[in-house]
Image (cartoon, chains in turn yellow, blue):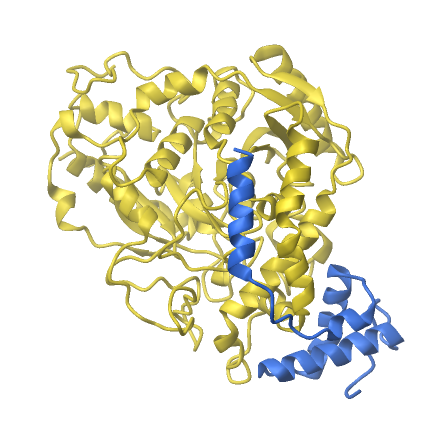
Length: 495
Length: 84
């Protein structure tokens, strides 16, 4: 076995190389495990690395390789693994193991008997579980702040903040611990970390991907999402994790062709009063270039959608449901005080009047009707900023630090939380750089279940040089896959 | 009303709205059996006021026994499918 296997930069490339016999899945898995441990010494994303399972050593026939064969993927530590209780970022004290959710006692430390449904789906596609990744405690925060764990470092810029709560997922993908990672998104917790690390972050339609075996934060808003380096890998993981047990799995080459042929209509909204000038300028410039370079037809949307009201209702629901989920733990807080970021998420929900929460839930279907009419009457997708400002330094958004700025922290989910209230899919992706060289990202929001259409436009932007995903790519992923791969299976040469 | 004065602005001297919401906060924590220290009341009152600056009486409304959360979820799922 090679000591330093030269792995392709993307999952699709890995699949092509395996089919061509450049190396075996076992060799690829061993190399990824080495990288995961080695690279984490710099970035602090791992909570623990999974022991190899028996299947790890089995070499696969190229004709039967799944689309994620040979891929060792680490995920946010909120997913059940058979025999292992997720820490949910609570690694010490009486809150440890406070997984919430499926049990009568949400604070139960029961040991799961089976993997979370999404992990089982990824395994059917050939993926292996590499380890668990850090997060904001109980997935309740917009940054990586977690007093129980070492601070994860942004691989693009050590002084830059890492968004949360799926902070470890973004750092792991950006820091080359793994090709892609699953996170959960309740108000932006996949998209914000992806944006801070210059990656693609996909939030799925409410209910489109099973949350069985996943720690809940606010079940009405919770979704499972993907963080990856390019659009094709994002689509590949999404299709694999959402595939029904008997469904056909995606072929990477066919998927690439499918992504390349979409022709969306794009509405753009830029509310200058709500965003930083550098972000607004980057978004305007990006919209102009999209109209010129891609098949997308772009139109400006009058800014009359009630985004702040939708965001407010999302926050109401998040506080109310999170408090309800973790009420047993909250009752123990006299003996074990909550860390400040977690208290900020859970305690308002205790005091929140039920009628406010019920009103937000009652209004949701009508709000969705209104949103479809306002946002998608003449467009297939909506372009907004991912973050309202350039990525701040990490100590600006960590509570308790001398430079902490609460307004900057609270603003991080301004463009993301309303999407969860409406249950819509969204994807963030880098479109440029700020004056400090940190990524500036855009968000595309689509109709329900339009995940692939969103990712297709990102793929076309990568292809045409409009999406700045190159920072993480040793190989240009937007190039066509090697011509040695076709949809039928095994070929003998890999370029 | 018990405890220190509460303000919904950053003013530490207290105001009628802040005091009323503060009292509602204390009552809600007491009902839920969740410990609350006095220093938390003002930040919580401000957080609630930011979330819904409605009349204080709202904050004292009882739970609605007839609310059907499962039906609300089903209605929303149907709306999502309708707009796919």
